[in-house]
Length: 242
Image 1 (cartoon, helix red, strand yellow):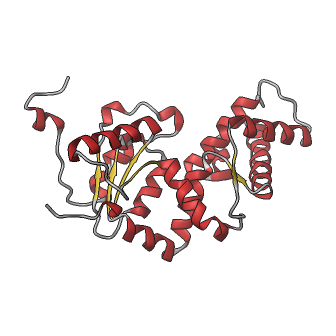
Image 2 (cartoon, rainbow, N blue to C red):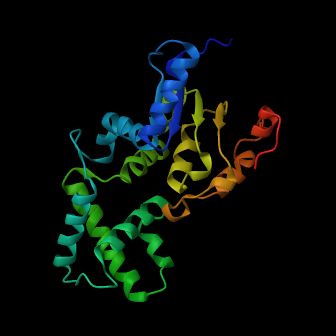
Image 3 (cartoon, rainbow, N blue to C red):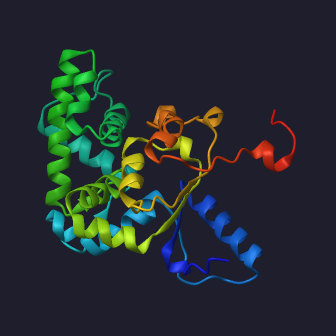
């Protein structure tokens, strides 16, 4: 028993349902509710960081979080300002997806350089820049910003990064194979120099590529965190998985 204070432990997963399941399992194993233990989704952890530090990015502390309908309305207004028709090429839902891909790739407007259509590249860059500017002016963030902006804080501020590394000395990540580029970068900055990170995942179950997840992240885990202890489920169950 290492008697690690619960406040130094962070469990990260992708959905509120999974986070609740983790909490319930810990409670069942320990037979008690553990205070100060952080079990969170990537996005709720991001909100926690932004509530404390977003002013360093120029936002007001009482920022709002846009839902999908808010984002659609904002893009709809941008299309009207730019006199772009909502047609097959510039269909609203497709634009929203491209904006999300750009943010989750970690490339921002540079993401659009990968698009084959020259007109789409140019117009999406304008839409993206206007979208980002308007969000900032409205003191709002969207769902993807809940990870992208905390990542920027951790990357740009050594003090903030060290504070969270000292707070979360032990990190558990669920379904690691489903992390996208910014979630992956976010985790790497959270991990303390002691590299006390435990990741659960299966590269054969990577199913969220359409959302930007990269199975390569789990495949290069041993390069990112050298000399890990690798425990395969069949070694625990005593039988091969099918």
